[in-house]
Length: 561
Image (cartoon, rainbow, N blue to C red; front, side, top):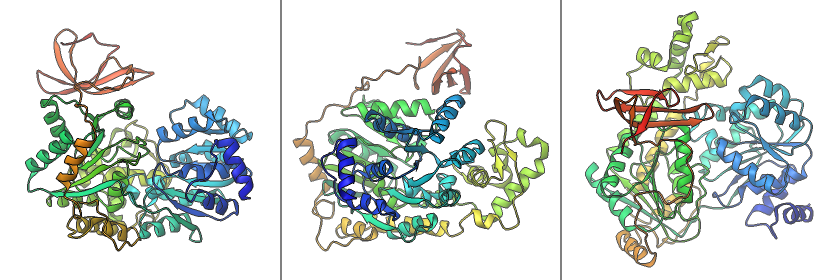
C-alpha cells in the first residue's frame, strides 16, 4: 500500500516524497482506520485526505467551514487535473444542480461542502444516492472549541456522519489541546481513531506578553511595534470600536492599514484579504473573524491588542506568523480589565436551556406575524439590549440546525417547522460549554502572568513537555532588544499611504470616500456591497449623521475631492 501511495503522490501531486507524518497518516487511512490529525497550517494536512481520496472507492466528502477556502483547494486540485468540486451558496441553483448531477454520476472523487449544506433537503436526498467511502472534517476544532457561537452546524457533524453511514473519517485541525481532542473524537463517534500530532514547536516565533495599565498605554505599545517591526503584520482586537480608534491613529500618522471586521460587507472583506495577501509591508487590523485559511508566509508580527478567549484561539492566531521560517514577533498586550470583556463575551456566547425555550415560545406567540419580527425584537424582549450579545442569534442557529425552524429573519422568511419537544433544549445546548470556556480563559490569564519560560507552559497545555528554556520568549530574551535586532537585520519599507497590492477592485467606490448624492447630500461611505445585482452602499450623512442605504444605480452621485 505504501508503494502505491508513493506512486500516486509522485504522479498525481508532483511531490517526490512524503513530509513529516504524511506517510503514516495516509497508510492509517488506507488501512481503513479513523484518524485525528493535528498539524500546523502549511504543514501538508490537505494532502493527508486528498491522496487517500483518489485511492479509495466512491466519493470523499470534505466538510470545510469557509467558501473561499474550499474554492482555493478545489482550484489547486483541478489545476493538477484531479477530480474535485464544491457545492455552496456562491453558485446559482442551475450550477449547483449540474455539479450534484455530476457527483451522482461519479465524475468527481472529492466534494467540498459546508455543514450547512445538509440543511438543504434536495442535497440530502441526492447525496444518499452516492457511495461515500471517506469523510474529511477540516478545521475540526470548530466542532467544540468555539461551538455554538461560531457555527451551530459544526456541532452536528457527528449527526451528519451518522446519517452517511459512519464512513471512514479523518478530522483535521491546526491546534487542539488534549481535552479538545477528546471532545472532537467523542462528537464524531471515532474514539478509536489514531491521533497524529506533529507538535507545536515554532522556534522562529518570539512569544511576548506586554502588560499595560490603560488603553492609552496599549495604543502606544501597538504603534511602537508597528513602527519598528519590518514586514506585514496583523493586529487583533476584540472590539470593532477599538479597531476604528487604532485605524484613525494610524491614518493620522500617514499610514493606511487594511481593516477586517463584521461591519464590513463580504465584498469589502474579500477585497481587504486579497490585498493583504499581495502586499509586501502592510498591516491589517482585524477581529478574530480574520485568519482561518490565511496562508501568507511572510507575516512578521502578530499583535493581540486584547486577550483572546482561549490558549487554542491564541495559538491558532500566532501560528499565522513566520511560516517562511524567519523570525517573527507574537505579542499579547495584556490589560487585566480586558478579562471582564472576555467573560462577558462568554456569557453572550452561551444561551441557557431556559432562554432557548423562551425564544421558541416567543416566536410561537407571534404566530402568523413572525415574518414581521427580527432578532432585535427577541433581544429587546428577553435580554438587556447589547449589539454584541449574540444569544438570540445563536439560539435561532441551533433551532435551524436541528430542523425546528427554517429560513432567516433577515430575509423575512423565517418559519417554525416543528415544535421544540419537551426537554429537547437540553440536547441542543451543551450546559458544560460555559464552564469550559471560562476555564480556557483562566488558562490564558495564567499564561499571561507566567514568570518563567512561556513556551514551557504553552507546550504543557497542549500536552507536550520540554524541560529546557526556549530562548525566544520575553522571559528568556528581552523583547525590545529582540525587536531592535530584527529591525536592523531586516530592511523595513515605510508603510504606504496607498496599498501596494496591484489588485483591481471593480466596485466604483470604497469605504471612507466622500460622495455627493443627488447633488445635495454629502455622505461618507461606511459599507460597500458589490456583486451581480449592482453596488449598494451604507453611508453617513454629514447633515444629520444618519446612516442610509443607497443603490448607486438609482441615485445621482459623484465623488468629492
